[in-house]
Structure formats: structure tokens, C-alpha cells
Image 1 (cartoon, rainbow, N blue to C red):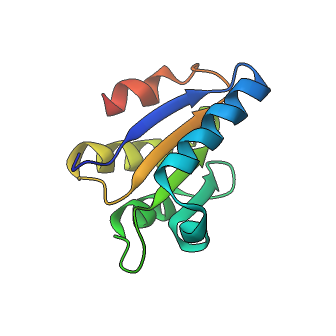
Image 2: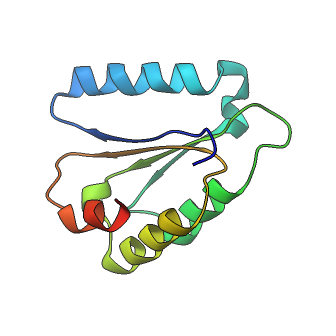
Length: 113
């Protein structure tokens, strides 16, 4: 995966979850680069094409980019299939943090292992 991280965070306790996510964002994307280097999308309001475009677009002007993909437990089947296929076949051009409230969607997790 070319030096970029991919991590799953499950929201069991809001305070600890927010604190851990904020620390990761602070380590991966400096405050000055966040306007262009930090992308937060939800599986409920976006689609796999947007996530893939974000992960394939290298940062040209700033340091590393980070996609925080929220609500993975709400992912649509078509998006799940497309995104899993992308993750298996391509190297990331940005960091990826996937978040959700539970791990009931084991089909997605199995598809990207």
C-alpha cells in the first residue's frame, strides 16, 4: 500500500472515538494543509466513485491527503462491491480512515481483506 495507512475505527464511545480520530488527523494532515488535504465523506451521502477519486488523486501542492470515510456500516451493496474491488487492485494515493458505529457489515470487511 505505498506507505499510506488504512485504518478502521469503530465508534463505541463518542469521546474516545472523537479523541482518537482527531489525533490521527493531526498526525497525518497538518492544520495548514486541511483545506485541500482532508476529505470527510459519508457512505450515506456519497458514492464509491467519489471515494475512489479521492484516493487516486495524489497531493500535488501539499503533504499527504486523508480521506475519512464515515458510516461504513451504512454502505450500499453496489458501492461496497466497487470500493472493495478498488482497494484490492490499487495502491492508495492518500491515507484512508474508515469509521462506523458497529462491525455488523462483515461482508465488506471480508471483501477487503
